[in-house]
Image 1 (cartoon, helix red, strand yellow):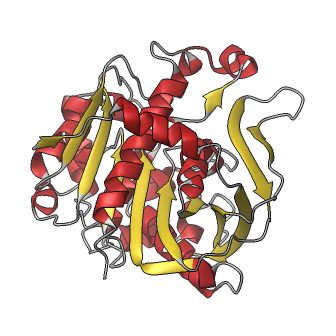
Image 2: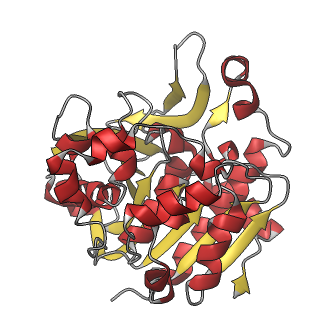
Length: 352
C-alpha cells in the first residue's frame, strides 16, 4: 500500500487556483425510480447541484447554509447560473455527501474542484439529506445512493446547457462518510446483505456507525423494501467511473469484503485519526488494506465533521462539539483538495 502525502508546494498551487477563474453553480431536478422508496413523501425526484468553470468576469456571491443574517456554515462563493467557460469538454467529478448532509455541505470541496477545471455533479440523496425528513429506508437501501449518481450524470449529459461541456472519457467520483461508501459502490464495490452490518453492530454496539437508532423491522417488513433489498449484492457500479477519492468512508461493514479485494478502479482514501463517528479501524483502514493499490492519507487530530463546510460562530453555538475541531478546519480542507487534485490529475489523465 502506498501512502500519499500532500507537499507544501501542492498546497500552495491549490491556494493559487482558488483565486483563479470564477465558478458557477446551477441546479436541476431529475427523477430516480428508487427515490420513492427512500423519500418520506414518496417523491421520485432527485435534486442535482452542478459546479463548473464559469466565464471570466462572472460575479461570485457568498454561498452559505442557514439564515442569511446568521448562517450556520460558510460554503464559499459562486456565480449563480453563470455561463460556462469556453474550452471544450471538461472532466467530470460525481460527488456524494454523508448521512444527513447535502450537496452544499460538500460545496467547499466541489467548488474548489470546479475551480481546478472539473464539472462537479452533486446530489441530495433522497430521504437522507439536510433538508428533507430522514427515513430508515434511505439508510438501509444504501446501494441506491450510487443509482442517484447514475441518474444525475445522465441528466447532466442530456441537459442542453451542461452536456456539451462534459468529457465522458474522464469521470471520477468522490464522497465523504456515507458518501465515501457511495463512491466505492460507484467504483465497483458491492453491498453485502444487511445482516452483515446488523451482526457487526450486535457485537460492537458502541462503534460509531452503530449508534444510529431506527425502526428497521417495520421498514424491512415492507414488501417493496424487501424486493429492493434483494438487489443489494447486484453490481451498482457506474462504468464511466475511472477513479474514486473517498474521505472518512463508512459504513464499510455494509460492503462485501470480496468485492473490495476484486476492485481494479484506482482508489484514494483520506482518514482523520480522531474520527469517532466512523472509526478508521472498522471502516477506512479495512477498505485501504483490502483494495489493491489503494493510497491512504491519515490526518492526525482530525475528526469526522471536519469534512463538512466551514462552521460559523452560529454553527458552533448550534452544533457544539460537531463544530469544534482540534485542527483548523481550513487546513483539513486544503489538504483534502490538494490530495484530490493530485490524485485525479494522475488517474484521469490516461483516459482514452
